[in-house]
Length: 171
Image 1 (cartoon, rainbow, N blue to C red):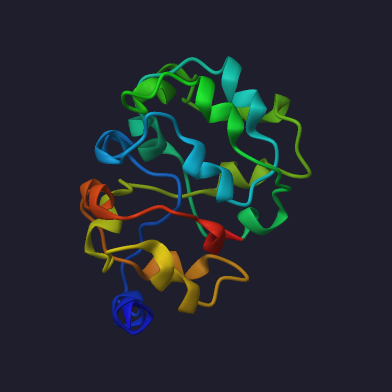
Image 2 (image 1 turned 90 degrees about the vertical axis):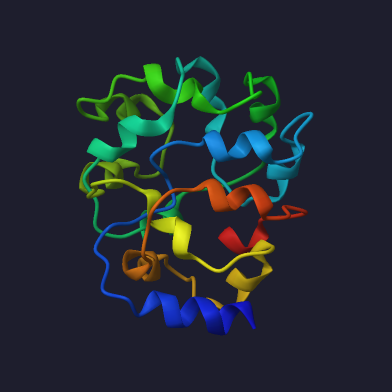
């Protein structure tokens, strides 16, 4: 049902994108004494984030973009590292040097150069995505995340109401 609603949203010709987003303040409202729930998200090895300064993800607005295919090539394991990240909110990423994301080059990766091609304007587009829980994403063809390019936007506050028992759909 949610899949159908999202598909109607996906066909919108909005040219902003992406999984990474303007700011992650929305996570503040997600029950998270810790972020263990993120453990179910398929992922590479983001332990490197532990050493990245932080504050908010607004810097992502200046990141170029095109599609999220890169996610397919990112290896994965678990996101336990997030447990050690101060997360009364996830604004910590702000102090990451971002005039360019060259810093990513030092991240152990199969190929994270993709970040250089991520366009932007603001990643608030996710606001118009139907939600309740993320299970609806299961019906979205996601061998790649190109579909996100046509999803409208505004802000990510809507995520506050998304149950997150697991985010396996991200694979």
